[in-house]
Structure formats: structure tokens, C-alpha cells
Image 1 (cartoon, rainbow, N blue to C red):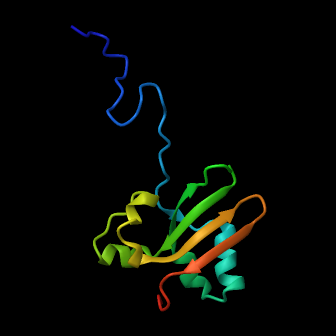
Image 2 (cartoon, rainbow, N blue to C red):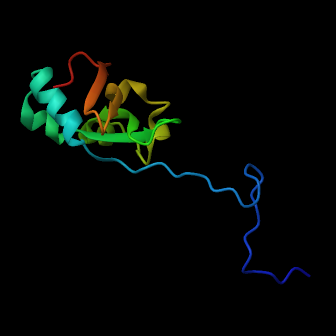
Amino acid sequence: MDWKFWQKKGTAGTPSGSKTKRLEKPRDLPQEVGRHLVVDQGLDPDWAWSLKCVRKPRENSKSTFDIRIFSSATVANHGVKVSDYTSLDNHMDLVIFVGWYDKNTQSVQLERLIKKAV
């Protein structure tokens, strides 16, 4: 009998003892990204700051993140549950902007996927 209930067993996909990094939940836009949308792209501030985003860190950088920006109201109308960055993989039609940003240099690169989102 295996009575070592205090030790975790490895799952089939991950080797025992390795930590898998969990992705973040949806959150408000970071300051750098919101400022880019309002100042550089000239979007309505009320609408831009109402958007939500999911992000994931880039492989070789601690300050650079890949980001997807969406409207929480539109996602709710389509009945999609957004829990992290990968949950929008099959619903790219709901993503308004996709790109990356760097917290240290405050540089933002976004591509608009939906032309008329307002």
C-alpha cells in the first residue's frame, strides 16, 4: 500500500517535481497599453479603459509580455469563459488587439484584429 499521501504524484503530462507556470486571469489594461491606445491610436478613453486583457510572459524576458485585448461584454454575449491567455485561442474573432508590451522600456506593439469594435 502506498500511504505517502503527503507526497504529490506526477501527472501523465508533466514529469514529477517540475512546476508548470500558470497563466494569469483576465485583468484591466496595463498603464503602458492603455496609454498607447488612447494617446497613440486616438481611441475613446472611456471605451479603451473598459477593455480587459490576458497576457503571458515571453520565454526569454521577464519584462516582456504577449497580450490579447478584448471586450468583456462582447465575450459574455457570445457565452465564452475567458480564464487565461490560451482560452481565446479558438475565439480569435473576439480579440480586438493582439501584440506585446515591455514594462521596462514602456514600448507597445499592437495589431488591431477587429476594425469596427465600438
